[in-house]
Length: 361
Length: 221
Figure 1 (tube, rainbow over the protein chains, first blue to last red):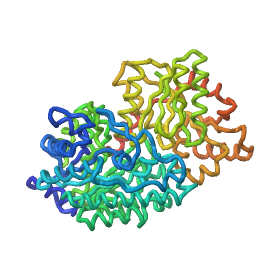
Figure 2 (figure 1 turned 180 degrees about the horizontal axis):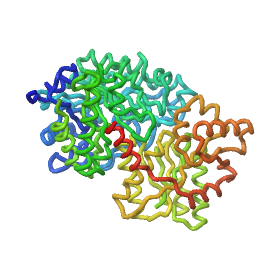
Figure 3 (figure 1 turned 180 degrees about the vertical axis):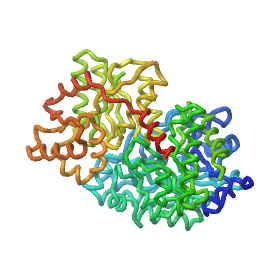
Figure 4 (figure 1 turned 90 degrees about the horizontal axis):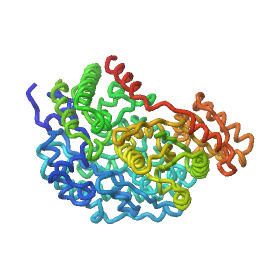
C-alpha cells in the first residue's frame, strides 16, 4: 500500500479501514522543550503558551509523529485551584502542599478563572500548536479528570479515605472539579484541536473497585457528562490511563472513546498486555495505544528500544490479524515519555522509525 | 546504600514508627536519611529531623512510571553525593506501589557511584481500624500488604485481641508469604525488631530479568 499521510493513516486506524502501517506516538510532550531555542527550562515551557506550543511544533518536525497531544503535567489544575506547586527549573512540578485538612475544606473549592494561570497557558498554547499542526497530524488537548484533579489538590490518601467516611463532602468537591473541567472543555473546543484526551487515572483496580469508581468518577454526574460535553464541543473523545489494572470495561466499552492509551506492567498479575487488550475486544471499536515502558526512553539504548518496538509491532500485528482488525493499535509509550533532561531523544526517534519499518501492514 | 520502605495507609502510625526506627538505627551508629512521599500529607517533625542531624528529602505524589521515578532517583543520588547515608528510610504515601519505588530507587545507580540494596519492605496495618480499612480502601491496603516482606500489625497496645486476630487473618489471606509481627509505634514495641530487619536482612531487587523473561515469552507466544 502506498504511504499515507499522518492524518490519512490515523483516520484509517480510527475507522478500521486498511492502512499502510500502524500509527505511532510516543507521548513526547515536556521533553520536546529540549528542541526549542537549544533547550529551555520546564518552568519556562510550562508558563509561556508560545514556548509550550513551539515545543510540539519542533517535536513534530524532528520526530515525525502521527499525533500531537498537548499534555503538560498533573499539577496544572491543582495549582490553579490554589494548591502550592513546587516548580523547579527542570523537574516535573508537583503539589507540595495539599488543600484539604478537614472534611469542611472539600466545600471551599471554587472554579478558577481559566483565563489565568497554567489553565490559560494550556488553552492558548494548544490553540497555537493546533493552528500550526492541524493540517499535518491529528491534534488533541489533554485534561485531568475530576477525581484526578481532586486527588492532586486534596491528597490521594485522604480523598480515598474520605470517599468512605465523608462521601458527601467529596462529592461536593467533585462537582466543582467537574464544573472546572467543563469550562476547560469549552475552552479546548475553541482551540481547533481534533480531540480531547482525558486522564482518568483512578479507574484502576489496584485502587478502586467498579462501584467506587462508578460513584466517584464513572457516573453521569462526572466523567460521562464530561465525555458527552467533549463530543458536543466538536472534539473526539480520547482517554489515557497509565495505571497497572485499568477499568477497561468502563473506560473503553462504556465511555466509548475513539482512542485509549494504556500502559503495561509485566510483573503485575493481570496487567493487560497489548495482545490481551486486542484479544478481549477492546480494540474492536477503539484505537488502543501503548505500551512501551516510558523508562526505556531514559535508561534504554537505541538498540534495546528498537528491539522492544519491533517486538511490539509484531505482537500487535499478529493479534490484530487474528481478530480481523486493521491498524487498530498505535505504538506509543504507556505513559508520557519522561520530561527529564536526560531522556534520550534518539530513543524517541528510534520508536517512530522502527514503527515505520516494522509496523507496515 | 540500603533502601528501607515503611509503607502503610494514612493513619497507620507510619510517621511515629519511622521516627522511632530512625532514633534506634542512629543509636546503633548508622548514618540515616529519610525520604517522604506526598510530603504535604505527612507531619514529619522538621525540628526532630534537624536536631538529630538527619537528612530529609521529599518526592512527589503522582505517576511512578513517568514522573516520580526520575525525581525519586534524583533525590537518592543527591542524598548519596551530599550525605552518603548507609540507610535511607522511605516513607511512601498509601497510594505508592512498593515495586515501583524499588525499581525507581535502582535507577539512581546510573546517577551516582553506588549500589542500591533493599531492606525488607515493611507495611504497617492499623489493627484498631481494620474494619474501616477493609471497607474504605481495601484495594490499596491489599496492594501494600501483597508487596510486603514483613507486615507489622500496629497499635496492638490499644487494639482488641479480636481485631489483632482479624488483622493477622487478613494479612495471611492477602499475602501468605509475608512474615507477621506486632508493633506499637507509640510504646515502642516492635521497633527493635524492625531495626534488626532493616539492618540485617535484604529484600530482592526489582527483577528486570524476570520482566525480560515474561516479555520474551509473550512475544514468542
